[in-house]
Amino acid sequence: KAGVTQTPRYLIKTRGQQVTLSCSPISGHRSVSWYQQTPGQGLQFLFEYFSETQRNKGNFPGRFSGRQFSNSRSEMNVSTLELGDSALYLCASSPSTGDRSGYTFGSGTRLTVV
Amino acid sequence: SQKIEQNSEALNIQEGKTATLTCNYTNYSPAYLQWYRQDPGRGPVFLLLIRENEKEKRKERLKVTFDTTLKQSLFHITASQPADSATYLCALVTGGFKTIFGAGTRLFVKA
Image 1 (cartoon, rainbow over the protein chains, first blue to last red):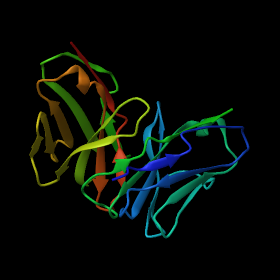
Image 2: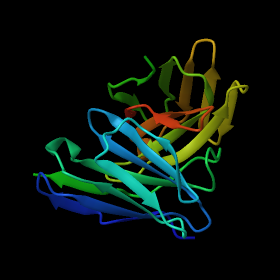
Image 3: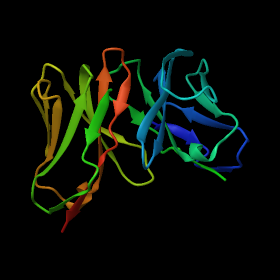
């Protein structure tokens, strides 16, 4: 079966702009989580969606938001981009919230803010 | 404060030896713990899960231990191979189903 698909793979944006990243989970998976990965901080949890509802949220400013659609596809949005938002953004899917089988991650979107 | 610590220094070992990676945590009460492998430019790949009431879990050349008293998990790769070279991440899953990752340890296996 197809894996987790994230688009785009690479993105360059200017400070102050906004960006939308997309994630299509594995078919049948209803939970989608988003993580930011930077060399200094590792994987930082952004939020988790299940059945179109945000179930958990990390400690990120309100500029970071997300949503999930009825087909489980998810988008995250970052407004008013800052240089420090440059990172690899990873999406992970699982059958349900707290599923013990582990996440399946996409290959990520590399965002560079200049 | 809550912390998950993995050795930030890279681990270099010779092919055929056992690699042991450490994950320590404070101020968490994890329901279970996961280990992932990440290659450069790719997302992490799930390897193993161990529950709080389990002491040890094995999968092929991989072994994970979980000591809730020491608040520590050890991840072992026996008979290591150059193809095992990657970054290994531990992740705690709390009772509230939030998954928190460590920063990872880079492993280099030399032929």
